[in-house]
Length: 48
Image 1: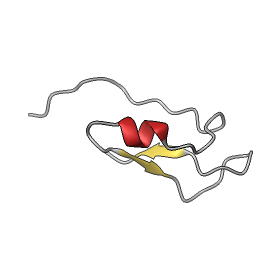
Image 2: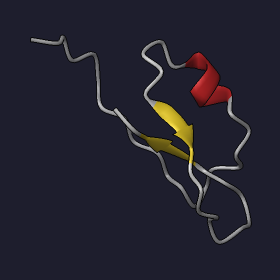
Image 3: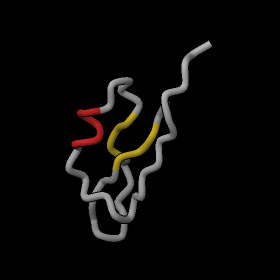
Image 4: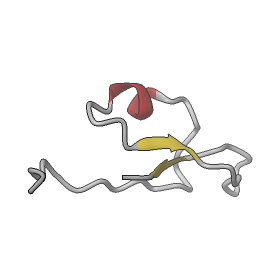
């Protein structure tokens, strides 16, 4: 059984789409969403 390290929470309306969380994620379960948020950015999303 996989070990759970924590809970992923992304506030997609506050995300600027910089990619820092995607690059820093050790398990690579984040990616850019294909949808835009209300500010016009592609926010990160959990795909694990």
